[in-house]
Image: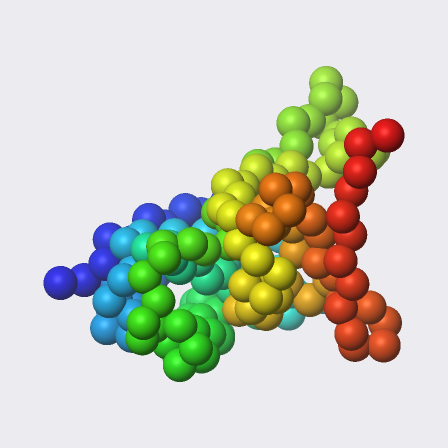
Length: 188
């Protein structure tokens, strides 16, 4: 049985050919990992991108029990961006399966990202300080799980998580020398 795929398009016309291609390929992801419950694909065209190769963006997010994987790729053609993102996601799934799939049944994953565009004001311009808002569900995990999720999700700079050991929100980040740092906020 193929996974249900939710396809969203922004600033691009979602033709039947594109939708069929995306649903056909992304619908088979449960062959790689049977625990996949949802697949979300967002295809976006950024007309004002500096580089023509960055104008079309494909973002794929898969969720399942104890699983959240996300990838994003850019290309000059939308289907090229989608196919590249799908290949990258399949590599992430193989890595995840090798590390977690056997014997892991605790049902914990990192965060479910839901992106929202910032509202425009009356002039049609975005507010100067907050250009994008993200909401995500945080599940409890320890520092090692957070490090694994950071790498699996492809977050290169930082990762926010609820530390199950301390009961607080922490930020894991990559330092310039390649090591990692942990921010443990205190309310003052």
